[in-house]
Amino acid sequence: MHHPIFPTQAEDFMVATLCLWRVTHLLAVEEGPFRLMVRLRARAGDSFLGELLDCFYCLSVWLAIPLALLTGEGWLQRFLLWPALSGAACLLEQATKRFELPGVFEETKE
Image 1 (cartoon, one colour):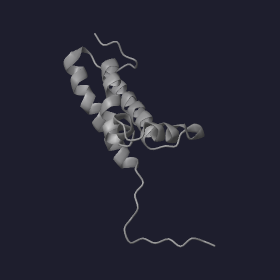
Image 2 (tube, one colour):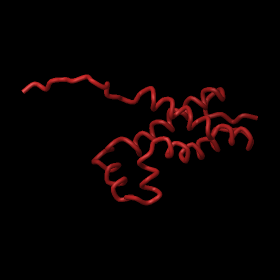
Image 3 (tube, helix red, strand yellow):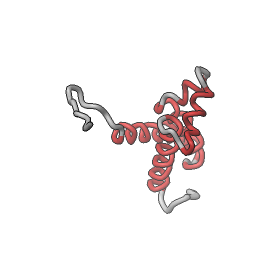
Image 4 (cartoon, one colour):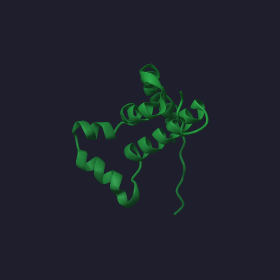
């Protein structure tokens, strides 16, 4: 029996995906309030945690584990949700990532 956070498992998956993307993006990309995330990444340095915090994709794999455990029913579903949540967060990251176009030059106003 599904004990949902929301009425359907699809809604659980969507909310878990958005939550995973948001937290992963905060930890890996953003400065955070009072530059806390910048300081956390600097303090972690070249350690395993530091390397993990430098990579959105790697971090999403690890942060997806507790969400898969909370969202899924049974071990097989949880096991399949783990990469599915990470993959969905990675797709969101790619869709929302700002990129620079090669050969485009913008003059700054002085």
